[in-house]
Image (cartoon, rainbow, N blue to C red; front, top):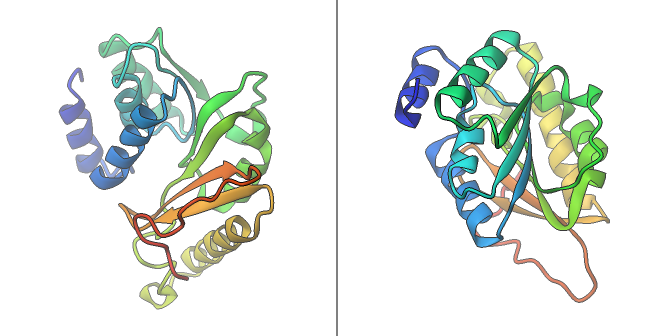
Length: 208
């Protein structure tokens, strides 16, 4: 599949989770506005977001990790078909088993929701000084705000972990986080610096 639109349609037809349009546009705009050159993505799926990021400029390099072998293989094919193998590196496996020496301007968390805190703590040291950690799916289809929307025990456990992650971000003394009511709920976390204030109301704050 060479066209991004074809990959997006494939994801829809085969129930592959990819970012909502509003969310992906937000991150693409962030990359452009903040001159992001290096991205670490946790959760490749079939390569849709990694390719969207890499196509923004020729000097953007993406490292991305996927645990599902079939999605990994599809991502590699898609990235190859789009001639982006020189700027997108795809890893197969659990993100928590990988260690990177390099630092990234942006770390994008979009993998197993139950591990968000562990991802954040593990990879925060791979962030450049003025970089950001962006997390997706904080609404989880509205269920984080209204847990009554599901009666599935496993889903309820997952929602509780997402709520703990949101509380973790809100109380974090090292990072300042802005929450956006875009897509399925997005957060942007940046290291706290003296005399730097972040507007927590831009885009709307998630209320849990």
